[in-house]
Image 1 (cartoon, rainbow, N blue to C red):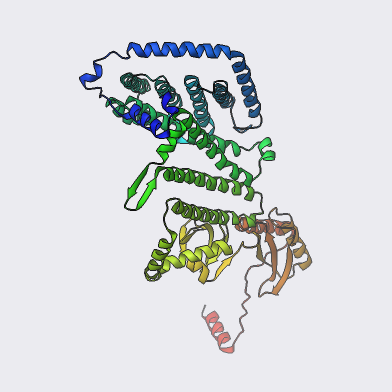
Image 2 (image 1 turned 180 degrees about the vertical axis):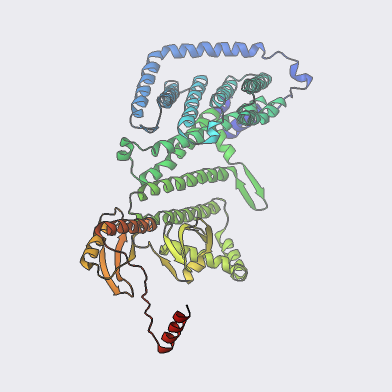
Length: 585
């Protein structure tokens, strides 16, 4: 293997193929057990390598220790600049665990860098140990600071252990049969441990245990057919995939922890630019480790593999680039949404409805750009797509006219921002709150908590009253009638005092009193107030009426009620009739 590193890349690639795939013997055949596991030649070779490695390590011990301590000190100092958990919302146990595993991450990374700097020719065993420590610390950090159920249930110690064993088995070039047998025994031991733990817990967390055991089943089957080395390589790739997810999640979570330090150092949208950087670093670390482990020429040959269909060829390199770009795009959009939410929370309430519109527009634009870029990477001609789209436009015009109409109307609503999420609108005499503007429909919720889907075209073409377009305040008129003979100046003063003392009535514009009319049985006044928020309107008007009633009682002001005096005019015939009735009695 080492000799192939110095030859051309096709030679190294072929060597790895021979090493992983060719000449394997299944465990269930007699040929697997014919020879000792391993033979004496391997022990003699490893003995020579260990002696040479110890000699090199002893000669560079001082340089190794100094460089390791320096890098570890730098990593420890960097921890003070990064806040992984909130200061006030985290218990001491979690805070101590996070500090411990961050230290393990620093130790693993420092050890890996030191081993590669001091031993440029390579010390694969030590590098693999350091990478395992770094992986273990990162996975444990993700468990305590990330809300990711997959990472929480993955079995961090088990993944790190499998990564360490797989790398060591390949680094030390054990015979294929030995690697296969060791990996099978490890999987059986892990399954036995899971079964024993489930039995002790009386079936608790059985689903989690089954998921962990099920993830090992494909690896067990592959190794059972004699491909132990291939199983180790697949295990390494699997562990690196989980590492990428854990590292990206830890990076993203740490950026949005609200502390005194982070609020000063990291502002709004700058965070959304840093989140994709963390995922890019995770992909970069994994790639560089694979380059160091497999050899640059090997990876170069692997990514140039292609599948051909007629004249079209799909390269593995393009697929990998698309996967990486997809994850970066997805996390960039997610980070932007969180960032714009954080920034929008400081805006005036009337302007906060623009936040969902901005999020939706940026999401559409970003995914559209990703789609075009993906087609370009895959070598799909945009001209042919344009021709196909032109042919479909006729069918779309007839069959999907309403869908397209609603889609265009949705874009008009998003760009024009005449209606935004959170606005209180009136449509067809119905008051409701806008919950979300989708591609085809807008979700609204009535004051009775009923959710209604309104086609976007209806909101564009029909009359809609937006009560909170410019600001959330609302003017309300309260009608008050007092009895004739009441002191009108006293009535007006009492009403103003009641309005000015209510916490949800605005001082500017000031509340004022209108002497509206001389009614049939009352003097009619109007108390006009501006409520600070439309959400408080119903409660505020009700509380004002209660307060007016109490204030009028204390001031001796009578609230009028409808009344009518009936006067009977005496007629001669009616008087004679009444006299007759009286004489009869």
